[in-house]
Length: 158
Image 1 (cartoon, rainbow, N blue to C red):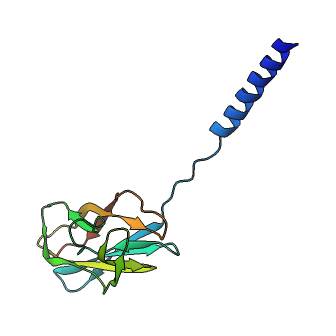
Image 2: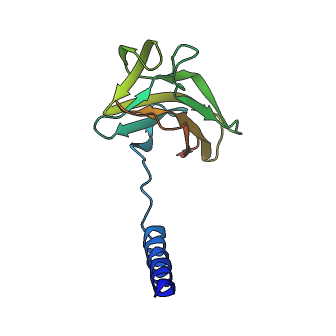
Image 3: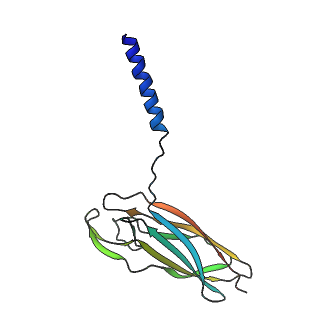
């Protein structure tokens, strides 16, 4: 009788563990990125990086004091046929005293549009690739820094 109870428990544990293993894991991805190009002139374009955050989540500015959250950063691969003009610009961030970091931080909620001007110096179309690295938090937690690859196709300048 005791062997039957032990075997029954073992079978139930096996069934439970199999059921739990097949449950889909919930992956948090509260920031969605959209990448587009705005043509400015024959030789210049603007790369547009649009971040849309789920309600309650925020994304940090490029300009965060050291010791705070990871700032949003844009790493554009060096390529042939184009060069960047100036730095990536961002909208005016929200500034608050953050008790988690014990400092004033700058962040965006809902939507943030970053822009980078580029000049094309090629008679052929050019591809601009890179990665945006960012950190997002809500009122309860912060997610680890995330990298999002991007790619833009720019028309020839001539």
